[in-house]
Length: 420
Image 1 (cartoon, helix red, strand yellow):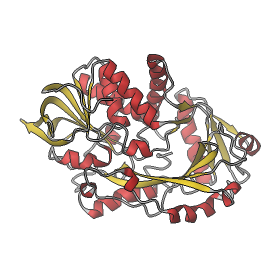
Image 2 (cartoon, one colour):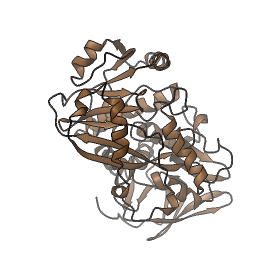
Image 3 (cartoon, one colour):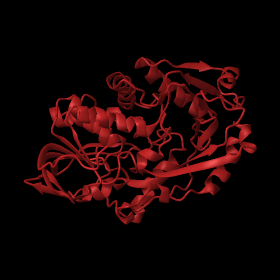
Image 4 (spheres, one colour):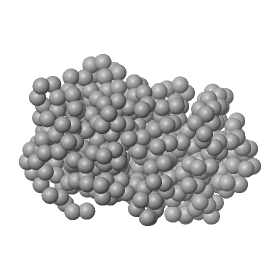
């Protein structure tokens, strides 16, 4: 993709951020008939948080609104593949959700009831069937095992680029290598953005800047209640007990752990009990996710909990690790929609590990807000002002956001199981 398209002095919508959310919003705006769309990304598309995602796609969510928004992503994948005539990297291998405690068993029953009401195919299976699907899994300790055959995982970069190509084909303009340096406002609303290539007038500005969402919002005088928090996953060498087409496995009771196949080996993720938050304002403009520290001690600490479920981990060779920054608010839920006092400034943030999974749902509701001024689902739970007055710049607030990620281990927490 070219570093920069033709000059633009005025447009209907400016999107700040070229990750999976920004590109999805651009795509859905063009689907809704908005052609004057400019997406501005200071680096390359999908190069930041999106590039560090495990790419899990799970349909089962704790509320009907979340379930509907995630379902839109599954539908968008099928639409994009037909439109572009090529795969977008989705592997429909299915997933297993394993309950190891009575509380999680009850939670799964509630989630599956929502899924069935929404027409999602789910069923309960026994340990023997789970172990047939995942040869390296020991499921004998499971209290309940749910099977969701249409789940899977995706290459987040391929999906991002698919959204971008489809958006451009409908008239959206995408700039890469261009930084937004300011957001202009007037009469209580956003009026455009300043960039290092000049000013662009706009009626709507959308903040989809990932780890930098709070600093971008501050350019409009908005205190966005999110902070970047470190996430991890690790990869083993190819192993005889890993089937390359085996399902995703979710173990929410075991440090919210998850596994999926990766090039013949096993990709393993889990949540840190003391997650590390970062000051988004302290991240330099050229910051790369490769600079996020990989903490092998976290894995070594948690692998003990995983061994009873995946005995192969005891002797598996570890060949890689990935760390990135995932944006969290204090309750581990999305932050979507408008903000008080600044008309025409919309946000798509607080992904809490669900950015890829919810990308089309988020893109579609932001497009609905731009075109119709309202959404087809209730976004009340995701309001940007639900925490009252906050200062995302201070360490105490950032620690609250880190606690939301660590707290998702606990039953009943707002983010319980959300990221997987």
